[in-house]
Length: 237
Image (cartoon, rainbow, N blue to C red; front, side):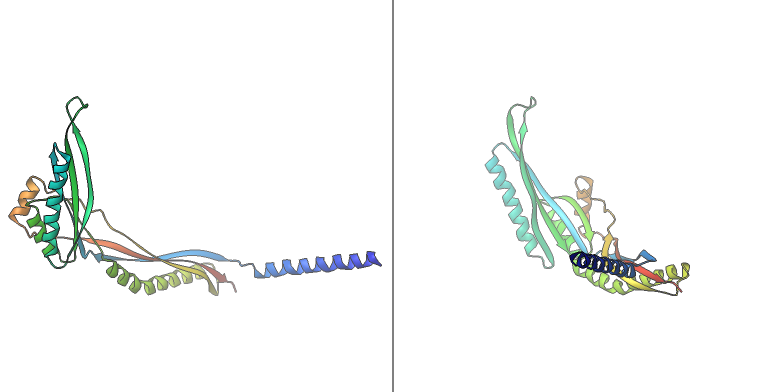
């Protein structure tokens, strides 16, 4: 009797296992295709960034630090009086200067940066020309403001989805399908900003800024991209 019971139990387990396997087979998906579509748009840079620096050398490190701090404070005060221009301190570091034999410290050299940012190119350009009387320029570059980028990306999301749907339809037709189901879809944003050459205005460049403190600015553009990555399941006739 016990033997019969064990056999019945084994048969029941086997039947359950086969049913489970059949269920998994029924749930398996076929004719799935991974697709990618993207839309791109050139967006004009609307933020201007300028990096200025001051550099000096002195035998007394304390006096050197005081001199650099004084220059920085004057620069910050001057910038804060101009509306629409934000300012923050950049890197600041000092290092020893050795004699010809490289054994004895003869002086200390220090460098400190100030970083400016504004959406008003003309105003920041004019201010930069004034600040170059006491500072030097490390570089200038441009970018897209965060709010501007988000607005453009939001507007491009629908275009990215439509581009994905069009590609999914093409793939379905190529396989001879009668339609497709969307399995998954991921929307991603990104972009490419071409490198902007750093402009060094020392020597000849400084003279140009002094002669024309408000030069015309060509900010350029960056490419904003929204992509749609997904998987579809083609329904065959």
